[in-house]
Length: 174
Image 1: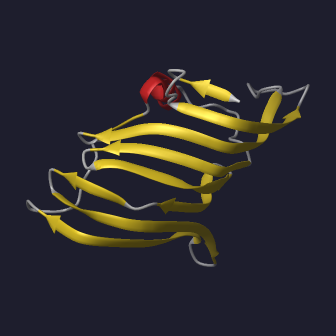
Image 2: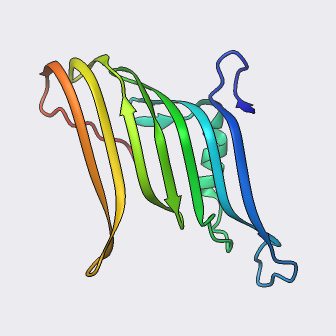
């Protein structure tokens, strides 16, 4: 297993991972000798926060910033990334959200997502209410005209929603 962050409350943990790779001993043009072809993560748990319009990953922030600011690599992303039995704990201006699910990426693009959110009470600067549960599904679908589309279905069940201010929609700083 892998733990990142404080031992008593890690920002990221992982029960198991498998990495498949291809060796190219005579690679040229700046390509790596070993190319990751598939990543499989089992039961990753991530703590994150989305407060004040900003997304933070705790002790992973520096790593995320370095990856996002690095120059482009000539190496392609892994062909497949499979994440199963994942858990996300997200702290927001409205309270804590927990999600559990799975996702898969193909050639660096989202292929499928299945996320469940259990019941919780949310209360923040623009409103409050009870989320009785939610299911979010996303699938990449090939189309003849446009190549590929992402179809998203979100089923949210809630009670006693109250919105204050001009709009219940939140935006994030880029």
